[in-house]
Structures are given as structure tokens and as C-alpha cells.
Image 1 (tube, rainbow, N blue to C red):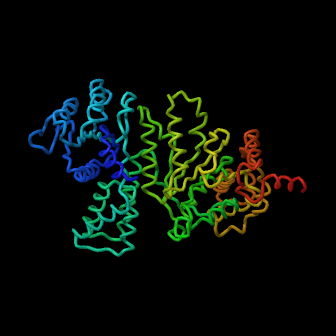
Image 2 (image 1 turned 180 degrees about the vertical axis):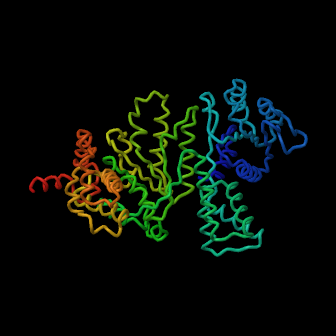
Image 3 (image 1 turned 90 degrees about the horizontal axis):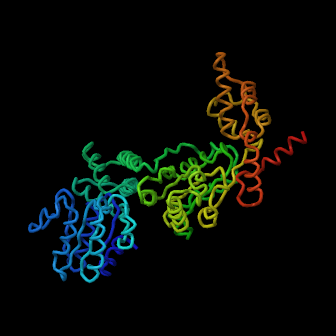
Length: 504
């Protein structure tokens, strides 16, 4: 159901108290006015702390700097007279005992009257004693249809026009922004060169990055890595390549649902984060990075509000990739955290969204310790597939060396003995191989010459890989994957690699 449908239904059902968390006061108030007019032309009264009630000359200024009077005003209107009362920023007063008591009294009184009180707030902060009387309504960011109408209105006002493709590009780039920000960035574009141009998509994207930064929850992450930058992991790459067109309109016409996401489990430094970036680049989708720790705030209800905000922004930007790095650290020991159930509520909201979402948000979650994840996270339906990313085999190490050396010394790649390097670095992860090359470069640079194969081997001999310092942890992880609980990202296991070395 859309916001309009929900709001109309609650008006007809005489829900007395509604709570709408949104930063878009102007847009939500315009929507409420339209629906109130459609429901018997109900008058709308708007109050804020500085100016009191506005719009009606007889009541102008009533309740100024007095939130309790703002509620008493509702009772001054005759019982049979309809009305919608919008109270801006009213969340700041809900902890006051008089305000809370008055709202609870009004919730009983207004059940028999055609009046509705709407509390507007940028976030959800509802005290426990008001949870039963307040109904929360989510007000979504502008949909593509609304954005297109606004862009077309600006084009008419400026006497300009755009081709259908450019118009669609600008509309798509604006998704995920509030209407106020959309108007501001488009006005900036018009002020710059007198009209909207295809290049203005970059201006919109910069505004989007700024907006996402201000949420302090999501990061708009540049994805320049390619699938070819991943050494090995052939099973995983085949799976991704097969779904490269899954977000297209042709896929929808075929009947394919949107892909849901991937859970990448494995040893640190084996390319899980690199894979998330490569997916976004290969599928030409924006990459949003979520630090789950940022979801948790100190105020009551703030964590749940941030979780909903994260979901709202991600869905507004869809189709996109939502990358959640090291999700196991955020939800480990879920039942034992002494935070009054905040972590459990955030986790519940998140996994319910994973299971029920219909928007094209592809979630890529990475985890190092599978045993730290709650079992609910691993249930089928949350993700399309769970892949285990283990230590690279000898052949994969050769590919990883080739990828890095092709970037560092593209013209001298043939001078390096890739076979020997791969053979002499057993149990090295991709990150450790990269660090080995950096150490080798330091050796060569300190002697005013280029680094060679022997320098790399010397550097490797000085590095103790994680596979030797955390043997028990890695062994448990490999045994978990070997039991068939996850799909292997590589076509060959490191175990067969070790057996081959023993034969030699």
C-alpha cells in the first residue's frame, strides 16, 4: 500500500494520532492537504513551536511556544467539525508528562470525532507509554514518476527540452534524494548554463553523495574494480556473470525475480570485499557501503529509526548494491548484549527486510566468523546463495600474482616467475600476497633497482600468514564449508593443493 492509500484509510477509520517520520515537511504537508480535501474537504491546521498555528487568521499564533496549548486547541474545535492537525517537530515534547497524558486523553476523545492529529518528525522517538496510541506511517522518498513530473515542470518553466534517454538518466540519478534536494540541484544546474544538460547527471550524483554522507549510515562507494581483478574464485565469478543481466527489463518480462544477494563467508584477506566492489562495477550499479555499527545510536528508538532510514535510502536508490562488510561483528552474541533489546530489534528489522524485500537492492554481506552469525541469517530466502571463500590454491595464487604484477609492472610481467612464486607461498591469502609485493618493492627501491622474483620470495619468507597464526579458527571454518553448508567459491580446494605438494 502507498502512503496515500494508508493515510486515506486511517482518516476514514478515524485513527486519532499518527506519527510520520520525514525530513520532507513541505512535500508531506502538500500530500496531507490533497488527501484531506478528497476526504470531505477537511480543513488542515499546521502548528510549530515558533509561530503557533498558521493559515487561519482567527487562530494565527495560537499555541506559540506552548505545545500543550497546541493540543488544547483541538478540543476548541466543535466535536462535529472535521480537521487534520499537523504538529511539526512534536517529538521533542513527548517525554513531558503533561503532553503524554494529554495525547492519551485525546486518543480516547477523538475516536468519536472526525479529527486526526499528525505528528511530524525527522526521526522516530516514541516513549513507551505512547506506543499504543501512536500509529507510525512511513513517508517514502520521491518515486521516479514524481521526479519525472518535477523535471518536466522545470523544463517547461525554462522553455527547454531533453531527449527521452537524457531525461530518464537524470530521473534515475535523482532517485534517493528528497524533493527539496532535487529542486536545489536542478536549479543549480540551470543557473550554471541556463538549461538542463546531459552532463548535469554528475551534479546530481555529487548531491547524492553529499546526502548519503549526511545520513552518517551509508557511504556512496566508488567501484572501479573489475571481475578480472579477482584472482581465482571461478565458481563465484561464473555465478555472477550468469546474473549480469538479471536487473534488466528483459529479465522482468521473462519472469525472473530480482536477485536478492550474496553472503560471502571466509578467511580474512581472501577477496570478499573486492568481490563486492567488482559486482557493482560489472553490473553498472551504484555501490552503497553500510557500516552496521553506525545503525546503533544512544537515544531510545534512534537505532530502529536509523535502520529504517537505511532501508528507505537503499530502496530509493535501487537498483543498487548494498555492501555490508563484516556483518558477523555487528550481530555476534545477539542474545547476550545488555542493550535493552536494541540489537535484537535492529536485527529483526534487517532480516525481515532481507526476506520480504521486492526492490532491486542486491545485498552483498561478508563475514569472517560464520559461527558468530545468528542461524536466522543463514536461512534460505535471505540470500540467493552463500559462498565460502577459502585460501587460494596454487593456481589461484599464480593468478593473484599475475593480477597485481600486471598493475605494478605491466611491461615486465614476463620477467617474474609466477609458477615459483605461487609454489613458494602456500597458505597465503590474496591480501598477504599483495603485502608481499609491497615489501619486495621496498627492497628494490632501497637499492635503487627494480624488484625481482628473489625479492618477492625474500619478502614472503618474512611474512607469517594468518593461516599459521590462527590455525584452529581457520580449520573450523574450512570444516564448516566442507560439510556442504556453503557453496565453494573456488573450483579446486586448498586441500588438493596441499596433497599435490606432498606428492612432490
